[in-house]
Length: 116
Length: 116
Length: 116
Length: 116
Image 1: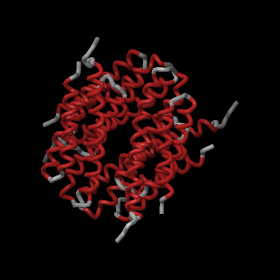
Image 2 (image 1 turned 45 degrees about the horizontal axis):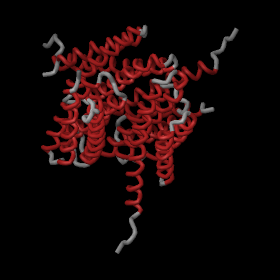
Image 3 (image 1 turned 90 degrees about the vertical axis):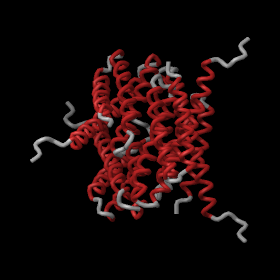
């Protein structure tokens, strides 16, 4: 009798969590970018990185949803972009967005470490 | 008198070429995936990787079109996925698609090498 | 004292529900498309419409997330595509996906009716 | 001997042109949105509609690239959004972008008229 979850089910649970984290920061980054548009041109650079992060989080979630054989390199890129975006959000006091990005950065790093 | 193109203009020319190569393989991969759907379930894995490659090529092009400060890690991931997709296309005789993927893999690698 | 929700807050609640319904059918359609790939070429047409529906649901959600002034026409198109996709899913016994598409079709129709 | 192009080949030529027009305004709208970010918060609304138009043009092109059976309603929505975006671009003197949007609006209207 197997009392431990199999490696495969642990992977797929972790992947499901990572998909959720990425879809969440996809949405939060887009929302934050839109609200910063009203604040003026000194937010041009944050808006740009938020749009980058939003799109890559969606793309990364789609790779995992398609059960892609090559999700590893995208997860690594996504972790880096999310980490950078979280730092930018910290600087401008967008704490909720920073937390969402940090959560998906952590998830993506964990996933990237599982690459065989 | 400056007889040499500046580093900055060389970068932006190279980036414009990379955007074109990525948008081209984005389109060719989607087209190839659709035609493989008609061929049966033994093409399920190629269709999956073609959809992956198509989406990441678009995302990577968008990062460069937005002049993103963090395009480097996405370009690296895109080069890896394009290379893998080109190999899969070789195996199934999709030569045009293999060439399109190889061209964008090469462009993306060159771009990724320029990361400061 | 205002005991009734304002028209505006009703609209934004309804929009939040519609975004959720669209993001849900975006995910379920992509997942269903991927599982049908394994079933053979008689599913080529359903896979195609599922990819269509998945992409348009995401685009429609993004219009609402950006608080677009022109979401109405996209919501109408999304309602039509979701309805068609639900019918295709019915025919092939993909009941969960049919339900997800029908839910977002209903939400999108309600939203489209609110166009000033 | 058939000296006239068949209806089907006329349709597919027209569709190929429409795909090109949509991909072009997808790129031009994204580029214009990014440059407006530097100009200040009075451009928040144009940026928003440019992001809308850019995304819907890509989605519409993908529907045609997938040879979707339901491209008609998306083409209609795309024509409306492109027309609106062209008007906004006119108002702020973004003439190249206005022209790109008008070209894809015209293409999309022609396509939408072909719906059986």
